[in-house]
Length: 376
Ligand SMILES: *Cc1c(COP(=O)(O)O)cnc(C)c1O
Image 1 (cartoon, rainbow, N blue to C red):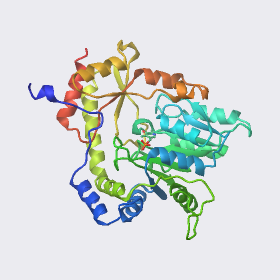
Image 2 (cartoon, helix red, strand yellow):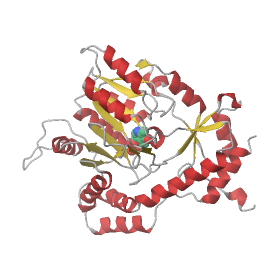
Image 3 (cartoon, rainbow, N blue to C red):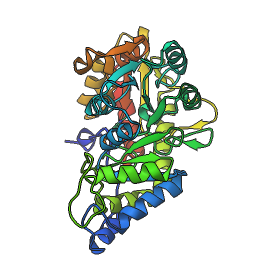
């Protein structure tokens, strides 16, 4: 077998090295092999410092952070929560964890995220009785969304805004980072995200009161006493100090990760620019994407489906992914109310994400491009 036939391009090639090894070792040597310790404090501080967040609580998954955000937003049984339908299942699940009722809302074509105009007209038509208590808006694939409009609409209608910035760490809109706009935001440090702790997440909040409340809830809600005293239901959601060590290592070279991602994106753009059947998302003026992944829409007239493209790529050992199936179309949420949905359905039927791990080099991208072009 020649070298070429041995190439294998996973969807997200891991990218860790000496900085991460040293940071994890430092965490082990600190003696804090627990969900508490110096690396955990330092990681939270570094996140706030690097991205200008006011408070960050590191937890063991992005999904846990979503759950905590909803609890802090005061969502309980029978409360309605708007969820941008073009998202990962975690947002819908978290609404159910607190007994809330999700209402799924469509995307717009420019950002693939929540349609701000639809949001405004929906909320304007709501009565105080049926007005949703909170909104979860996701940055799909790390791309900027119309978060300025979404934030002011939520403010005007008094709806708590939770940004799902799981994939958008390092994305900026008008100089403000994704996660810096809402009442709360969540980040994920899962293995495939732009910064990983090998599994983890964070809740970003605006004031110390919310931060302290979230910390208590994430650590089993123990009351201050010399015995185990509990008044409210808590969770075991804290991140471990060793994971935070890995996060510190990754954060120390976040610029390098972003610049590698950008190079991969630029190479895809220049090599795929001549393929008329593939379109990339438009990035609005004044925003900077983190280039987490490279997502494309297949032209309607192309006569090829995402599944077919995935198969062609798989034959060359390239692992691509389809877009999320919108949550309002999931059997899990078949009884849920939805607002619009045609745009997200179209995106689902035409979208593909190409492998974009920061561990990829120029040859890897060339391989993917050649595999894509081999279909015609
Ligand atoms: C990854 C992801 C999550 C969940 O994060 P976990 O850390 O895997 O729990 C939530 N929302 C979006 C958009 C994601 O991509």
